[in-house]
Length: 398
Image 1 (cartoon, rainbow, N blue to C red):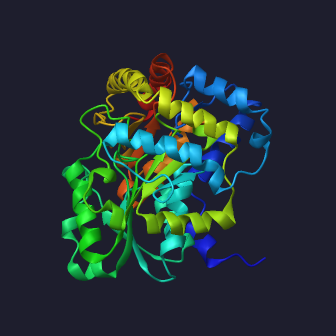
Image 2 (cartoon, rainbow, N blue to C red):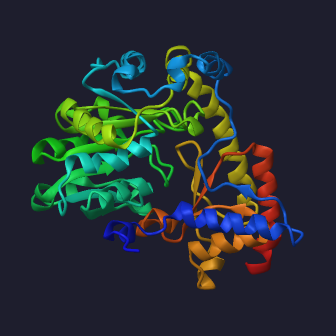
C-alpha cells in the first residue's frame, strides 16, 4: 500500500513509541514478577475535576441535543462563556461569533491551523524542543519546518530577534507555547511581545499554544491576548484538559484574529463536528463557576514537585526546579552519558527494570536530546515511592 510522504515525514511519534513499550511491559508482567506500571509519561492527571462540572454533564447527557451532531451554531453558549472568561481572566473583550472557536483539544487546533493558513512548501517556525503537534501540523500541511533552538544556558528563552529579516520574511507561521511543554518553564510576557512584533512587522501568523496558562508555580504566565496586534496576526489556544482536569473530554477553544478563526473553522467543518452539548455544558460550568479552580490544583502540583525533586536528589539526580506545574524536565545523569546511553535508552531500560514510564526528551526535538520528562500525575506518596523503586536500578549502574 502506498503511504503519503507526509506520513513518512511524521514518523511514529514519541507517545506512540512509548505506548508500544508500555504495552509490552504489561504483557511481560504476566510471565515475570515485575512491579505494576507507573505511567509518568503523559500529562494525564489523576486529579478529578470539580464535582458539579461532572454533575452538569450527567444532567444533560439524556438531552436529545446531547446525542445529536453539534454544528458551529450550537456552540454559541460555550463561545459566549469563553468570551466572558476572557474578560475576567485578561480584561479583554472578544467577539464570541468571530473571534472564538471551540476545539476538540488544543492539540487539534495547533495541528489543523497550518492546513488552514499555509500552502505546500511554505515555511513555518517551531521551537526546539516543542510539543509534537507543533511540528506535526506543519508536516501535515506539507510545509517546510524551521526550528528555533532553545538552550538550558539561556533559560530556555526563545530569541526571536536573532532571526534575520530575510528569515522572517520567508515565514508564514510561528507556532510555540509558554508556559512551555516540555521544559516546564513559565516564560515571560516579553517573549510573546517579541514574537507578536515579528508577526506584525513581517506578516507572520503567530500561533500561541497556552493550555497551561493557569498552571504557573512561579511568576505570571504570559498570554498572546495581552500582546498588541493579536487581532491582526495572532491566535491563542486554551484547554480544559490541564487546568480543569478534563483531558479525556477533549474540550478546548481558540481566541484569535477573525480571519484565522474563520479559516480554522473551515478546516474543522470537513474534519469533525463538535463535542456533545452535555460536555459543552460542563465546560460552561467550569468557566463560569470554577474559574479559580486552577489555584487549587497548583498547590497540589507544587507539593508534588518539591517532594519528588527532593526524593530524586537523594539518588544524586540533580533536577532543575520547574516554574510550571505538571512536569519535571530532567537531564540525563552523568553515569548514563559515560556509558554512552541516550534518553531513549535510559527511558526504555528504566521502564523494563522498574515499571516507571517517562518520556524521552528527544521526542520533542533535537533540543530535548539527553533530557527526560516526568509528569507529576500521581499523588506525592506514589512519586516518592517511584524514587525508591529507582534507587536499586540507579545504584546498579552509577
